[in-house]
Image 1 (cartoon, one colour):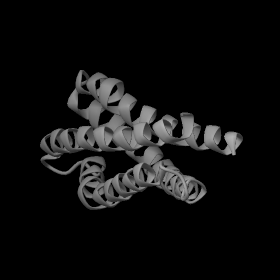
Image 2 (spheres, one colour):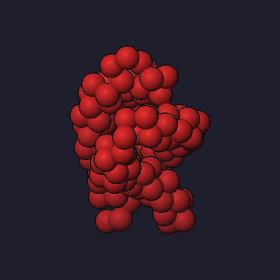
Image 3 (cartoon, one colour):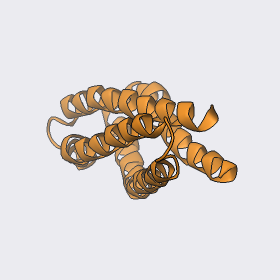
Length: 143
């Protein structure tokens, strides 16, 4: 079980790290570029991350679910159920509120810069949510 815990933590925490790095490093760097170059960078990033992140989120969701099942008869069950709930709600909210904005930015809509600012603000909320779920997971499996 310890190896599985390490694997789950690795998958979940690296996802959180990538989400954080997009907000803390990639987007601020992109905002310093000329609009055409910025749009090109954002479009290419959206293309790559748009392929990887759905699989990564799904794998994380499955691993979190398995962890909850493994810890079902322990005091950590309620904490893991909270982590699962946060993760699932965040995943659904991402599909509903972030993916459409990212597509419009990547396609270069007339107001893509405004849409990107909206996306960035919502993305920060997503980061806080997945980080909270990851902390809850870590709390249960590390203690």
